[in-house]
Length: 480
Ligand code: NDP
Image (cartoon, rainbow, N blue to C red; front, side, top):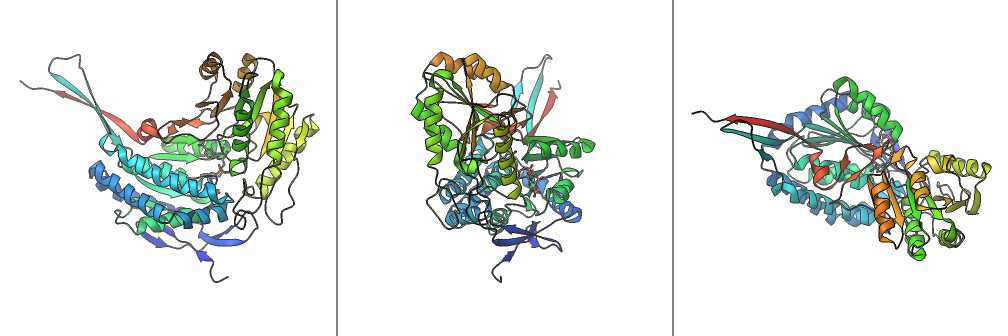
């Protein structure tokens, strides 16, 4: 018991505790891993005040200096990559290989955003008036609140703090109560650098208390949130009184379209990998398949065999796995209930379909459901588990119409050898991202954004960076 760490909030470059604590458990075996503070409004406001105090001085530094700090932190992350990956595996249930990919990608992301220091641009416009100059200046917003989900907890720290800091903002991060340890370990690495006081802050706690305090504060200029649609909607309400700017990365229900002329091996391998990676708990992984009738039987056989060979279990003791557990009991219950309801409504169970008997963890069998219909819950709601529902279609037009008929609009994919079909799909699929002949993941230089209830604004690349800025126009009239 004695080696259980109690973490502290990181505010104004100092660690401080909280009377109330939250226990963090390993989802693979229910082992107690650590305790974290449950911050309330007073601690959250202190963090916001520290970020506010630091912001002007931070923004006044040349961008290349700010970038230097990101690079220092990236280097510390790399030096600690193996240790951090083990932490992610234990608190989130991610398999070791993927956890290490997440850590290294995070370091690369910090370096990538640092590269923008010499590329931030304003504009000079032509004027309608004689002897006038019009400048568009790009400025930081001020204090950013970054609220993180649990599924890629470490990467999401960088996805929010790197563009925020590079553009001259300061930040207060609240990690998910399910996976906060990696974030407090990140804060310890930041504390080892000479990053100015108050630029980067972390508060632990629940969404209902710390999250609500952050999002309803008048001291926050941008709420950058990644999580579920329900929470996104509550955050919009909390932000409304102060008209706080929002950047919302919400859920997805990614359709994968498999046409009769597709390379079926490629489609099967890509969709299977996408469905089991991180145990299906990825906002842009294939959540529903529309397969053309001519190849449907063949596709269903192949993907069922592929899913059935998935190696899964407790990744904190077994290294060579394809997937770990679901995040918690609620996640497991939701997946089990959705499969049961789908079968009750006429879906055919091809493989899996049950909670796996793997000790105390939240394990669910890799599952394929055929014969699904457009109005079934399993084709409409985010599953967030290793379950693949499949519907047969008769044409590309039908597949596109079904894919678009969703409250989500994050990502989509299509498998075809026909260039015209691919181009038509990319034109007509109404999603923030479309993958052709592959599945997730997105590139850091791209733009990750959803339509409909999948969010507002986006992340990554130049366009994601500029979400952390505002534009000021300056008119300069020459005097004679
Ligand atoms: P949640 O919405 O449950 O939680 C996300 C974060 O919001 C957590 O830190 C949570 O705190 C906090 N929170 C909860 N309630 C409030 C509130 N009222 N005010 C402020 N903050 C609050 O999402 P999950 O963590 O379950 O993540 C899974 C979801 O995230 C899925 O829907 C997934 O699709 C989506 N997602 C989207 C991505 C994208 O890029 N579009 C990427 C990754 C995930 P706590 O947990 O501590 O209580």
